[in-house]
Amino acid sequence: MLEYVSRFRNRLHETSQLAREGLRTTQARMKKHYDQNAVLRSFEVGDKVLVLLPLSGHPLKIRFHGPYTIARKVSELNYVINTPDGRKTTQKCHINMLKAYFERDKLNLIVVTTAPASVRKPIDNNEEISEKNQHPLRLSNSEILANLTSLVSHLSSNEREDITLLIRDYSDLFPDVPK
Image (cartoon, rainbow, N blue to C red):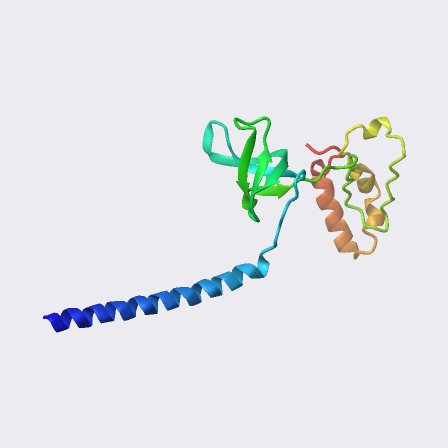
């Protein structure tokens, strides 16, 4: 009986050693795989960041709040953030909860068009906005649809006819002002 207990303890010890070694190799392989796409991030005191925080009244829902400023760096992965509009004036956050915040210098409007690049005209930011362009996301679809035959002239006659009919049938999908 004593011999059985002794052998059993030895086998348990050997088995736990094998499990530890297997765990070490698996962890090393997982770390290597993770580190391939990992990006080292760091912030400086005074940097503006967005912080992933729970919504008030909904502890299981989260979203980015901010921008807030970094008050101090506690460690490589932890930062103290100034949160003046929160319950606490400062909050300690892990780097995984932070995202860099970039301010826009000026409003850059994006004009979306379906015309080929050869037909598009460059946008002059100093150009005065006319009354028809009061909406900031005004598209030039009506102008493009008016010149549709010239835009599809490179297609065969059957293809031109098909695409023209298709676009005309669904012209309500191409308004100048998105809805």
